[in-house]
Image 1 (tube, each protein chain N blue to C red):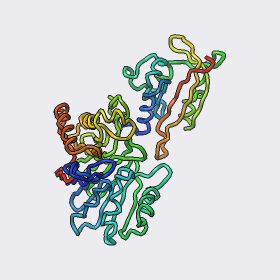
Image 2: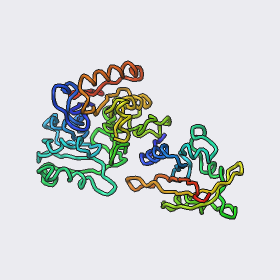
Image 3: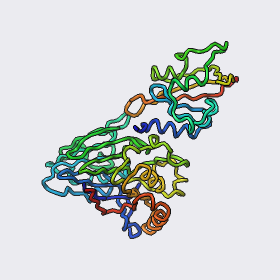
Image 4: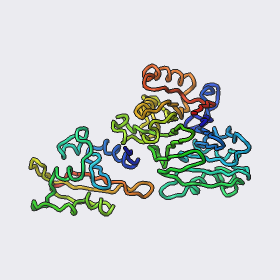
Length: 277
Length: 131
């Protein structure tokens, strides 16, 4: 399973030399196994995604939720405009609206010039919740996690490895930190024993103390969650748009010093490619 | 060990922040969480007891009516909510194992998740206004 990071920034794309090392595009990750190709979230990083082989005629897009930074690249994904392509979008419905209805609010004028029904590809939408489903060699679990609005995290099992992807998540939700009993921790089942976890780490602990309830995690909480769940490697993801490369490097040095003994972790960087074997 | 649904976890997060006693049960009535103010009513700490079966925690205090007559379980708000998945409210007396009587109001509501599934129930104990 090959995991490629196309966008690792949170909230809004950033441009400029100050964020060019870690990258400014919002959430988008591709996963390939054999001739099957997944795209996790459709943030602005999606504009860089191309299907790796012309023989691949199906793409599955898994959206954790429909906040703009996770769908703004959708309308610029070439496969949607290719009549020969079969595209499946899997994302959470709300209690009152289908995925089609919710997605149409973005993919329609005045926000976007093309309607969903006019997309030339063979498009299928799948409403998901706490779901288990298979896509080719992938076995996928989605579970609701703590973030404003219907939001899921994903666990993708394939090729003998497990990837957990929870880019927007506030597992502590308050000043007390994570619950001691793991079955009370949001997302715990998804990440447990994963080979690689991509997890929200938008804030430092100090920043988080001023932003309870915003739906994002402190870096320390992300590390603690990964440690408690025996994750083998953690990539801190969804960087705050105000964090420059220099600031992220400084924060990372401190984290390595304080938490480096718990488990291997790094800051996610646009362009990274990880082969999970 | 299955994790709790997010709707249950969020109810605990809320209960943790409140100064009124809150009890959270699963769909069978087993007590899966109670907050610090509720510890005073139960006379035990959640950190010490952990979860309690319905048989255990339902005997910790005795519900009574105005005349001091024991109320049948089916007359209690939480039991009603577990049965019909609707909210209920009632004012009555409770007597602890130590024989201490207290007038309380109880509001219970079902936790119905995003998918429309019944996941558990919450009981909030209010100090009765005329207590």
